[in-house]
Image (cartoon, rainbow, N blue to C red):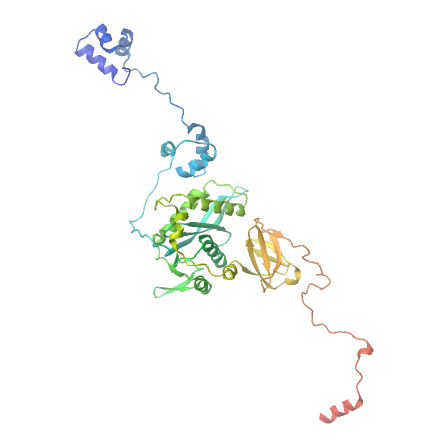
Length: 409
């Protein structure tokens, strides 16, 4: 009987029905003193009011608040993080807890038409610039290449210190290799590494990118001006990487970040996709992608051309790697393979290997880099010097030779 409205009920029984305290006690089962207290003091709070049952979420609320302080408001992301700490509850109570704590969402933009892509038809690619707090406490940026297959929604991401042409082609090769094939069309925005200009509505392709598309066997297409919705799948992937992968993530260097990114791709590609309701990795076989070109073609785009500086170092990804001084001034090829940087000569023969360094502006010395430099005066070739010889080496000629020369003149 001790629930909301008891005071009103008792007042009605006393004032309107004109019942005595004893009659009310017999009908309601309440004690006479309790009835008198209600009539004197009004509605009484239930003894259990204000108490709450222990929730599975309680022990993880400090961690949740810490994650939210880092800008993470996505319930799925927070769930993954607290599950790693031992949380065994569901996502519903987590969403209910987060709802009043989230900043207001602003949703704008015109209505758009939805398109579904046929298997093997299209991939979409883009660059995203993501921020992180560096070891000094400042804000740094890193480029992230993203590509998604339109039908299966298979995703690939790769972090890079640059967004130049060589980095773009290398990332695309790695993405095709990850997918195990090449789609018919690759859709991109109008980045300078892809097109030079537009002539009467038609893109004028960068020569290197056009040659790359020909060798790989895909048709490049660019999206409409100021219409990022044209490649909405990859646009959403950029935001997904920023909000789901990068938010609150810790890493020691860009190599560690990329290893985590690869593991993350393997994980999300084996989870049910929110739009299709299917698992991308299982749908990949239905894509029927075109086969990859031969290994030599793929590898050629993983190499980057560099010139050996006068101090016998090669600049690569913000780090300077040393080579033997005899290659000074020459053009060499550089690529990263796993945790090593390989440097090759014009014939693609390896001349130097270094462990990858992710600390910018660092100099990595080669063993024996300057051996013989002083003796050869720093010249990696034989100079055209004159030569002093002994008297015995001077050729003795007959006087007739000089007489014949005089007659000719």
